[in-house]
Each structure stands twice: as structure tokens, then as C-alpha cells.
Amino acid sequence: MRIPVLLFSTFLLCSATLSFAQNRQITGRAIDGPTNQPIEMANIFITNTTYGTVTDKAGNFSLSLPNGHYEVVVSMVGYEPIVHPVTLSPGDTKQPPVLVFKLTPSQTELNTVSVKTKRDPSWYTNLELFKEGFIGRSEIAAKCKLVNPETLIIVYDENDNTLKVNAKDLLIIENPELGFRISYLLIEYNYDYSSKYLTYLGYPLFEPMKGSKSREKKWQKNRLKAYNGSAMHFVRALRKEQLEEEGFNLRRLIRTPNPQRPTEEQLQEARKQLAIMGTNKPINDDHPIGKILAKASLPKVIEKLDTARVPYSEYLLKSDDNTRRLAFDGFFQVVYTGEKEELAYVASESMFRKRQPTFQTSVISMKQEKVVLDESGSLAEPLALTFEGYWGWEKTGDMLPLDYQPPKE
Image 1 (tube, rainbow, N blue to C red):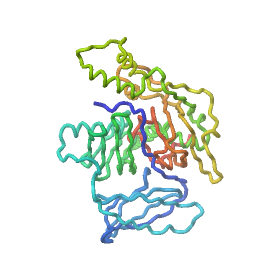
Image 2: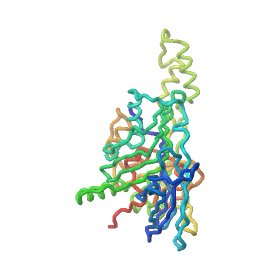
Image 3: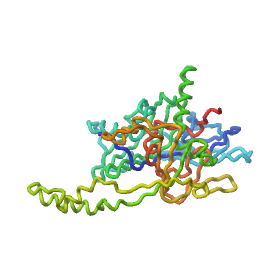
Image 4: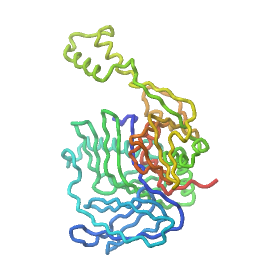
């Protein structure tokens, strides 16, 4: 069984705004909340970057960071994680205050239905489904390795037909194609089989791997390919109002309900009546119930693409302080013309309908009124935007840290 192409896929683009200027130090301590005793070897990192460290015997840590807005993550096995915002302003020359993190012992591992202690065959099946939905199925993602699957708590909830996953420790993912070892603090993973809707929340740390010069060269090439056309690339280009210059084509996508398709209520009632009739009374396409059920496979909505160029003023809000916000109604189709779809993506759309790869096409819609676009290429409110299509298909295996910068030509 495979997770089908997601109609809607929402994933975390963790917030961090980097200025790539002279670094400054942030210092702090991690202590046990009830006893105030220092915690050694607690993980301290800036989410979705390569900046990270661990605490020493006295619970102390220090990180050197450029100016910017950050989320500092503090994680330790047996404790609830802490996520704390930190801002290093360019005009502020004062030493940032010492941060003291009091960690609370973890009370529960997963607030859901009972957790299986025995790993039966269904656990391993669900593990593969989780890896497909979380790491992905792209050429890069397929070569990633989940080092410690034993830390996962995997539960299939029969009541609402969902797969729910949590973790007792940081997930370790090795990405040999991009040259990163990812430590991922998974907060929530929820896949609804009925609606084919996936959400996952978490905080990743990217640790660059070390290799030979030829290996480093390959990683740089693969990273640039992963960056081009990505959601991070899109946000950066949008902030600079250079979408078309960097290969993006944005148009309005108009969706209207399909008047030829029966409503869900009509389909449910038809199936109910069919069940009452039983198999002794076969129906044909001329039967009223047959006419309704014959239209169940029709698309729920009809799409029409408006080919007119959309002015930035209709969806990009600008402030004098260089803040940029995205705000629009309906749907946008975003096509990246610099690269075509992977064959695996084309195959995932349908096992029976074959076609040739076209340019990478995604659809975005707003779940909130507006969202701040950070200079790093992230969203200040990660779940404010819903991704469909190619961006919905790409997952953690194709992610890059927010401090990644493509080589200058």
C-alpha cells in the first residue's frame, strides 16, 4: 500500500531570518525544572539551519550567529522540548542576555489511542508509509536513511482513519545525496486516509557531512538542483519581485464545483440504498441509483487557468521596514520553468495514466489572511499556506537549511 498523491500537503517551513553578516554570540543554560540541576548534552539548535551545539557538564552552551530572527530549540530525551524566539538586531551592539531554559520532564509520549508495544507486521507497513509521507519519494529522498526508527511511536487510529506518528527522541536522517545529517524534532505527524490530507510539524537541524573534494562538488551540485524551483527559492524570489526572472510563472487558478457530479450526500444515500437492495437486484446505468453512482468518479471541481499576469500589488504587501507579506484569495498556480518533474512524481499521480514530464507545477492557497515572508525563504506562520502538486509531493528529503545560499554566477 502506498500513500497516494496528496491533494493537500502542509509542511513546516520553520522561521529564521538570516542577514549573513558579522556573527554575535548567544549564551545560555539548560536546567531541570523541578531541581534546577544542570542538564548535560541537551541539544541546542536554530531550527532549519546548520547552527547547533550541545550543553556542557554545567548545562551551558554558546552559539555564534549572524543578525536575524531565530527560533532556538532545546531538546533532551525525557523532557518536553522548548522553542524560544531570539532576535539579534543589526543596530544593537549590546551582548544578548543569558538564556536560561528550565526543562519539564515529559509526562506522556503520545496523547492518542493506545500504543502497541509489540512491533507486528502492521507496524513495519506503517513505518514505510510514514517514511514515504515524511521523507518523500523523490530521487534524493529515496536514498535517505532513517537511522533510528525505533524511537518512533506509530499509531493507526481506526476511529478516524488516520496515521499518527510521534517520536521519543530526535529523528536522525542521513541524506547522502545532499550531504546532510538531519536531526529532526518531530512534534506531530498526521495523515488522514479519507481526505488524503497530510500535516507534519517539526524542527530540523542540518549537520553538513564531510567528504572528499569530488564528493563536496557533487553535494554542491545536488543542493543547487534541490534549491532551484523549491518553495524556499520561490519565497526569496517573490520578496525581490523577481519571480519571472528566476523561472517562476504565477497565475490565478479558478476552481468551481462540478455541476455534473452528485454531492457527497447524494452519493452516500445512493450507496445506502444499494446496500439495502442487496446483490439479488442488479442495477444498470439507467437505474436512478446507477445514474448517480456512475458519476462518482467525475472530478469534484472544474479548474480554469487565468493566463493574465498577476501584478505583485495584488498579493504582495510591502512595508517601509522591508517586511513583505503574502495575501490573496483563491488559488495560485506556480510553474517553475527551469526544471521538469521527476518521473517518480509523474508515476505517483496515476498508476494507469501515463504522460511525459512537464515543468514543475504547484498550487498554493491561503489558510490565514496573510503571512510574513522571511528573507531566508521561510514563512513566519508555516501553516498559513497550503501546498498542492509538486511542492506538496516534495518532503524532508529534498529540504535545505535556511542558511543555504546558491553559488554566485
